[in-house]
Image 1: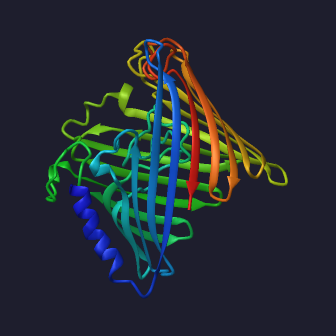
Image 2: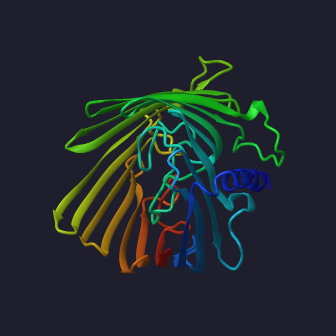
Image 3: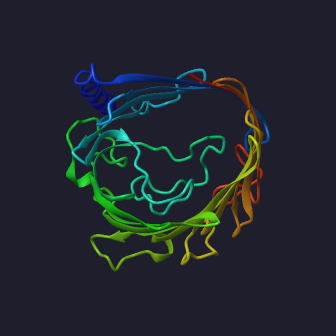
Length: 362
């Protein structure tokens, strides 16, 4: 209810002050999914799912950007929790060169498609994410951000998060003991992008600094490092868990007219972790390849692989855009490795699956 109440307040602010100076753009996205998997006992599980996103965005006003988005997942009943129905609602205002953002939205700290040690706001995405998703990192939280441009592609940004995901509180009041506050500085020199930042997580009792680099060396290369430091006793750092390195590269090859190949590789590495402790994996790879022979047909491969326990998952999909805005896709996946591995393994729930998806966006 807290999110819905705040959403109504922000929506009223969003709609009424600017009715004559901006237009409203509506987007409706619907997916219907037939999913066939099996449980840990080897019995087939058949699910019928529907997912919908309804979004509104202001256009036509250069100084004010605003957006509102609802999302929901249904089967025989609504699966999305009520407070998660409001996916995004925000206003971004240009105040004479300063950019103020308020609402429930996403900010992209650091670099990375799946693994990103620089994302100190939302944290790392564990390798359990939906491999069929077009965008694999799109979490949102209530925040207030001030962006101060320093020139072309360089800026300072201060961010305040009033509500903690660790505290389930329906009150509109802000508990300062559960807030998060930080900022970042981003600079671009030639082809090198340097970003560094710091986040104070009062709800976790942590200082969380990070450093991120991005540059082009035939491939688009990106690296990030972060460290979690207890604020009560900075010497009590658990180096094997709290020092995190991520990185990767990405490249699009244009093969012919309307034909292209996109390759991506990323890693998550805990350099000081105990490789004999299999409660979590200290090294995980993410591999992705997308081949588009014609503009309306795409073949996809995505995979996670954990070298310490030789476990992982392979996902293969085909997407065919039949009409404008309407597409059909089929995807299959299979896990491999021991069933007691931290994230993947053959012989566990959902280790084999098949999806048929009808997707429409208007």
